[in-house]
Image (cartoon, rainbow, N blue to C red; front, side, top):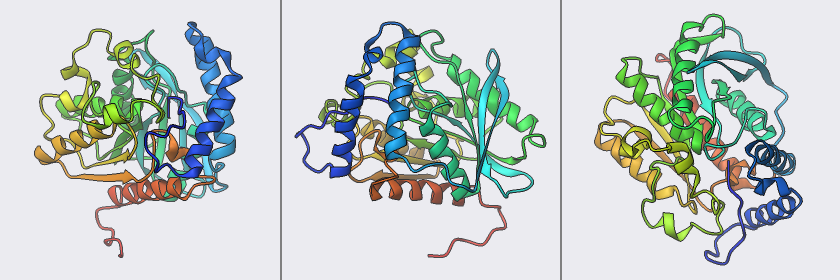
Amino acid sequence: MSGRLEAAPVFPDLDPAVIGWAQRTGELAADLPGLASEDQSVRRAAALRLSDLLAEEYTEPVPDGARIDDLTVAGGDGPIRARRFRPRDATGPLPTLVWCHGGGFVGGTIDEILNDRLCADRALRSGVQIISLEYRLAPEHPFPAAVEDAVAAVRDVRDRAHELDADPARIGIGGNSAGAAVTAIAALRLRDAGEGVHHQAFEVLPGALRPVGASSERFARGFGLDDAEPLGALYLAGASLAEASPLDAPDHSGLPPTVILVAEFDPLRDGALAYAEALRAAGVPVTVYEGAGHVHGSPALTAGWQGARDWRDAFVAALTLAYAPSDAPPPRD
């Protein structure tokens, strides 16, 4: 999750838990001057510190039944670090989701406490192994570096399925925020290469790397992404929207079943919904979950807000269903 949220009276329906988290974010950020540094390494270190402080307060800890280990997978320009999450008592190959974290294309890391807590919880609850990638970041590595990392990682996980305890027939892709945009384009590239994935899952997706719909204006200030406008340009670095923006891709056919989770008060909401409609128009099965009362970063508030736990449960249910064995009985109502 990225961006700083300032509580604002623009929309009065924010839950007190979200407002309290927003205020706490501002308090913690005030003590981290590195967030405003022009040095990317200093800014990333400060952002990691802020993320970790918030996660320690607002995100449920790693559950006891989860196993976490670090590994290396192929990237677009050599090996990259990755972190694997799976149920501790699981044996043998599991369906596997290759995941890209959020961070506005210029930040975020698999080393965030937030990444550990959310991925471990979701892997344990769904039974889907998650492999989270330390993909390359802009501006040092603009588009298509991150996409190339995700594509190479999916191929590597497939090739090393036995070693990584992954089911090669059930390997999917997904991400949060910027990571969702990265993996959406990676899925298109894999489709074009005849190597389509089993499923794709996107949280708070930047469906278009440009403003789309009323949400892009209505929630542009005070809802968590006030500082995000320049990030898309840093990532694109002159690339075309048709290449890098999921909604603007010329062809959405042949993509796998998809789940998209959108936040009600997110400036990215309408772009993600438009992407969902583009997939449907191309014949792709799509499930959309709209988190009532959510802003871009609030799905992380699982320690103290039922809304965030509802979001988690919807995501877990979607993964469980999407990666169920083909001979599994249908879920009960």
